[in-house]
Image 1 (cartoon, rainbow, N blue to C red):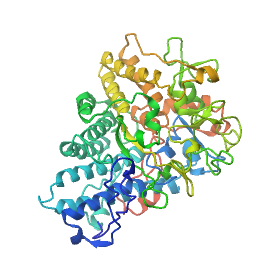
Image 2 (cartoon, one colour):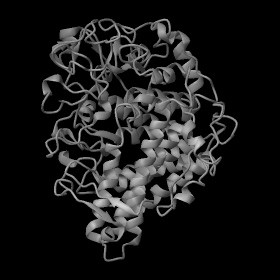
Image 3 (cartoon, rainbow, N blue to C red):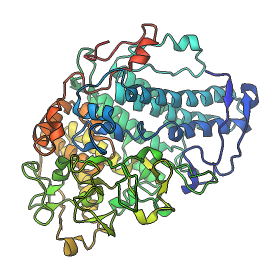
Image 4 (cartoon, rainbow, N blue to C red):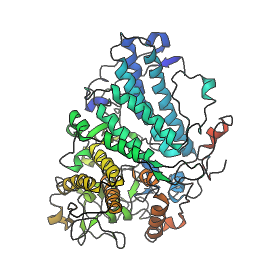
Amino acid sequence: MKKILNIICTACVVCGLTACSDFLEDQKPQGTLSENEVNTPEKVDNLVISAYAIFTTAEDINSSFSMWNFDVRSDDAYKGGSSTNDGDVFHQLEVEKGVLTTNWNINDMWVRLYKTLSRVNTAIAVIEKCDDSYQLKAQRMAEMKFLRAYGHFLLKRLYKNIPFVMDANMSEEQYNTLSNREYNNDEGWALIAKEVEEAYANLPVKQADKGRPTKAAAAAFLAKIYLYKAYRQDDANTNQVTSINQDDLKKVVEYTAPAIYEAGGYGLENDFHNNFRPETQYENGIESIWAIQYSINDGSTYGNLNWSYGLIVPNIPDVTDGGCDFYKPTQNLVNSFKTNADGLPMANYNDANYEMTVDNADPRLFLTVGITGLPYMFNKKYIMDRTPAWSRSGGIYGYYVTLKHNVDPDLIGSYLIRGSYWASPMNRIVFRYADVLLMRAEALAQLGQGDQAIPLVNQLRERAAKSTQMIADYESRYGVHPYCKPYTGSYSKDEAIKIVKTERRLEMALESERFFDLVRWGDAPAVITSYVTKEKERVSYLGEAQFTQNRDEYLPIPHEQISSSNGHYVQNINWGK
């Protein structure tokens, strides 16, 4: 690690906490200090803040740590933009054709994430040298281990076989001898879990600064890690799930115990949409267990805004001119929200396209997807239609628009800011309580305890049915039919698992979880092949799409990293050398 530490402590760093607390606001710009000068309790927190900051400053529109750019490989989203040549490397990922290990986006994400780990390790190295006079030593170390685990988690979901930088005092020579195959898949997840378990033991139940993880945040993270770990993919010659580990599933149940979250004051929002509102009063609500914090009006030029969603704003004439219109919801996703006469998801949902004035639909559809004939961001000044305002591609990518990450255009200047691209200070929730319920339900269903899993699903369905604050007049004004009911029957193990998977898609749609869920379940080849087969009848560019099993589940190791690893990195299967 570098011995000269750049202390980046302006008012806009560490997840920019203007929306939650002032532990950044009191920070003053510092100079470049030697390691000895920062090896004191009063200086360590500056390094900790710098480590938090890297999770916002290291990402950008093409390498968002939300992973929306890479979710276009799923059945939830089209790439979008003006054409297939606009962001062509992501088009290649979407259709899984022409992807090269030398593509810039493959290496760019790798580099950005390892830069975050370097920054976190810098803080850890200094914390390790502090004596017990630093009263927050154990807690700050727990926070940094949580962040280090999060960086490795993001990398592992993308590339599967990664080098782990777990020694904060590693020399350059030692780093250059790391292997990306030192651990098999299960061992890699176990290594990440160990870090978070250590964090869990030392994190407080509540934090005054909302950007810092709590014990519940570590528990939610552990549940997610063990859920990935449970679906074993340890055959080095395939990416297929070979078994589902019962002990790992029991760990998921352990770390999703309701008492953990009740102690921290977490639960479900009354209205689903509250999780996706930029206004300060909605930031860090009861459902937000840990979120990347962004800010505005913090003394910097724009604020510590989320530029990583800068490409997904639609191009509304004379309003959001320059909006790039990426990350477009698929017809398949829209169809999946249709409900039957019992208010439940339809088994044959994709046989016919959703018709707004005919079909029943889960209310979450109208809070997730912008649909022609309805107001964009619930503002009746902007009615969506089949024009270039809502599809820069002229319909190549359809006319649906993602809503969860966008902001009402009337909030331009307050919560929607134009720089090189559009940006917002709205937090990005990494772990929300709904996800905890779904993870618990999934583990219980896989353990054969569907009678306990279905009531958890019903909590979300009952909340969905009541999530009407923004769409209260949609039925009378626009003729839509919001209709969502809980499950009331008894279900086999396989039926319960299918119910949970379906509910996860509806609840988490366009939160960039879908592709990774399909891969960990081992469902990606079948689901994406089925999706493409039908969807190419609706969007012509998918005619060339083809998912290759035991290759396309993961990105290749970047060629640049292979070349500079002195033979220590091995390429992922079926990606060549």
